[in-house]
Structure formats: C-alpha cells, structure tokens
Image 1: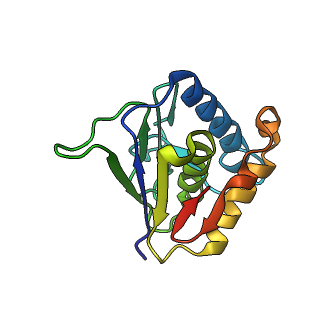
Image 2: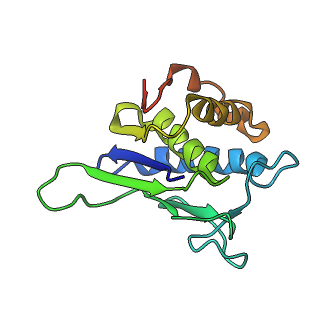
Length: 163
C-alpha cells in the first residue's frame, strides 16, 4: 500500500530552533528506533545497514533499515523552493513500512517548534490511529524531559496536522 506524507514549509528556519528540534527528535528516536520498545530500525538515506541517519543542525535525513526502507525522509534547515513558488513543498513515500512512525514523529517535532511555518498532511490511507501513535511516542519519550509540553497544541485531523 502506498503511503505518502506531504509538507509545505518556508525556505529557512532559525538555526538555534532547528538544532533544538533535531535534538528532541534524536531523543525520541533513541526510544522508538533504538530502545527496548523499538518500533522500527533506523538507517541512513539508502537504508543499508552500513549507513547512519544524518541528524545534525542542518538536516534530518533517515530511512528505515532495508528491506523495511522506501524513500528517505529529508528535511534541510534551508531549502530553496521550485522556480515560481514562494514556499517549499516536499513529501516522503513510506509504503506504510515501520519507519513511517519515524517520519511522522520528525514532522510532529518540527510542527511543535515551527507552528504555522510548516503544514503537514498525508494521503487518506494513513489512519488517525497511526498519527496518534506517533504523537504518543513524541510525548512519552524518556529522552524528552528537557522539552516537555508543546504537543498538546497539535490537532490531529487526518489528513492535516494543525495547531
């Protein structure tokens, strides 16, 4: 089954705020992709076991671990829009593989930090329960205590996530 998660965003985000968002996402992935209650296995962009996710102050890039990989999730702090547009539009096809929750968590963290500067929506094949599971993972991460709160303002109304 094809699953695609879309987002529209501005060209550039504040470096310090992006770094905080990346740090929070990295803490969440310590639980959901590496912890004892692992929900998926995380790899670098190509999904190979020899590749590592790219989680730094300029970008968040990862995929599921092959064979549970599809398209990489790529979110750069700075990204140019296509000619003729004043916004950046991106998407990630996850194929409903286990790393879909990682993509959802990354976008929920970014939405928490950047509010109406990012719009998230998905095709209708992603269930409300799937988004709720991702939101719950963000809220309950044991590495997330530095950044408590903020998720209560997000409204999950598939196919769009709003404040």
